[in-house]
Length: 113
Image (cartoon, rainbow, N blue to C red; front, side, top):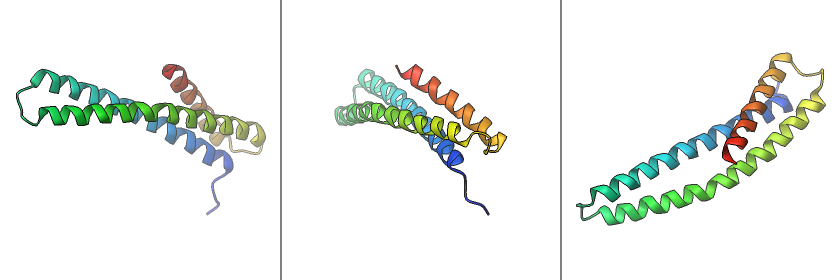
């Protein structure tokens, strides 16, 4: 079996990073909901500790997001470069997939701004 092309590797890298960022956003919203629930619930003797842990997790997730966005930008630049250098050599399905991933990554970057 032939090894994947540079274009395919760059495409999958960007797609994975965009998926990772979405996962962090989902985690962020879950943590915020959990914090809200703990703040309203009160009563439990362990609630203060849980609240502290959730807040710490929330801050860590917020710190990771800018790093992931930068990695997406870097990988996106590499993918766009591969699209240009691949030119007519690449498989049309590979090029189509790469262009779709580029559009998805650019949308993700715009939404984050």
